[in-house]
Length: 113
Length: 116
Image (cartoon, rainbow over all chains, first blue to last red; front, top):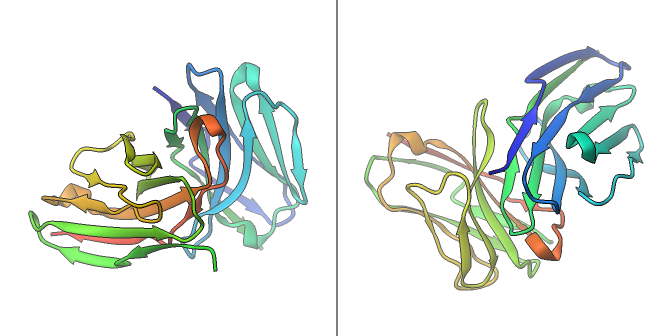
């Protein structure tokens, strides 16, 4: 069975603060895929990033960065200089090589002006 | 426009009355999936399909049925809905899934179902 644990249920920050969302994916598969999705207050789900288990390179996209550590099965997401528009629910998810996808419970991020 | 459509967007029904939520994608995607979203539980996968005529159970398949007769459509069927199936449902598709490497999943707008 697979399990995705997002350590924070809710995070509240003030604009321009950096914030890190933690995610741990547990699986017995050696090949798996990790994702982050954003759900803004409007409700749609927006893809942010995908990472394969055999690719441990960190990634940066603008103010967003992701750190994958296979040894700890962690796939953490950092927002630098947060903005009010970053307020959303963020989901981490893990997928196996046979198609099953498991999401974490989500982290509610509120960025105050 | 590339998209995943779901119908209806909102539905209020009564216990035991069979219903179908349709899902359609126009991107020629092989992989499709249904999720339910409940407060504090995130999204939970109900069923997924790697291709036409290939479906498999997700984490919470009880009380649901699916079919994949055509590549573009993946309806979700509740044969005898119960109040614990009141939830927000999302359909999603991606080019491939599983061994052929996951791609970005495109999500539909969601269907809010209330079972009285």
